[in-house]
Length: 381
Ligand SMILES: *Cc1c(COP(=O)(O)O)cnc(C)c1O
Image 1 (cartoon, rainbow, N blue to C red):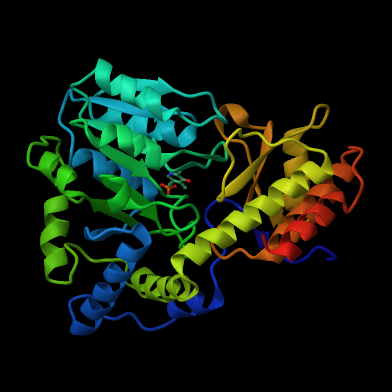
Image 2 (cartoon, rainbow, N blue to C red):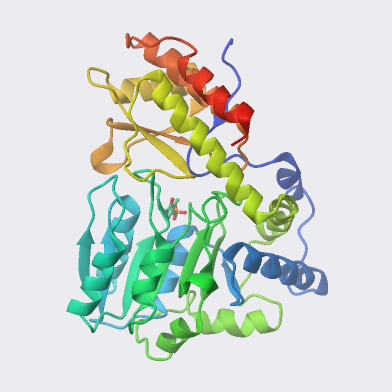
């Protein structure tokens, strides 16, 4: 078992630090108690610092998609016209939710691997002044692409529409300033940069978003924001929360805030930069024209079977990175540097990539990527 140790380097779920894992081993506390309310108060306050907002951040027992649906059902009405930015699998997910609720979706189709052009969103809003909401993504995980939410927000904030951002993979890895940029709804979840197991998601609404809540006529019960809003004011939750995950959240947030949210983001930026240097050092190409801090998408080189390469990295070297989703299956690899990830994690992923490429007969010079990564990591900038 030379390669017997597993490394989880996928863009979610991500590795969980030991101190966070241990919190889940503690006895369950009842959720209608001052002890639990105290924890809830503390994590709610800390979440605001991550979201960079003064709005309350609600905690749901659901995966990220649940929080996406929560955002939409509470603000939209049957037949509403909305704009959906689709440049990957998670943009497609917004579109599927919009269709499931009978919305009239205008689609801004973006080539996979490219970022949307903010001006274009302005043009869509001018062309369709009845658009109620713009649904987009901070980091399109399926293509490894960062979207410029700050500039997109400039076009949306003076329109009648709200800006809804799926920041599930991006938050705490990429910069996002909900209040100062003017984002109306931010959606996040536990199993990415928060370094937690899957199962919790987070969502915050601006005043402008709450303005639509009153008019929304879509049916909801478990996901109705009014219950969360009332419960929040008394430091409780409308239904039984995922108690252990909330206790674990307290630990992971204290780790993030101890390092400092902006330092955590800088660490992600540096790991991403080292990974990109390494990919080029190996002689491979990046897939995205606007790559970023969550994961690095790499084109599978000509003549190499992408699925075989990926299984070799996973099964022989025990490094779990991701392949392409949907139409990108077999065409790209995605190396995450997300959450509980540090300098040597990049070295592990690149080393496994180099060795697997060599196994597959690709002419790679062993150490060429590792060396390139080391040069970036040692400099630390
Ligand atoms: C992981 C991810 C999601 C959430 O998916 P779930 O499986 O429902 O948690 C949503 N959006 C993006 C961009 C993601 O990376």
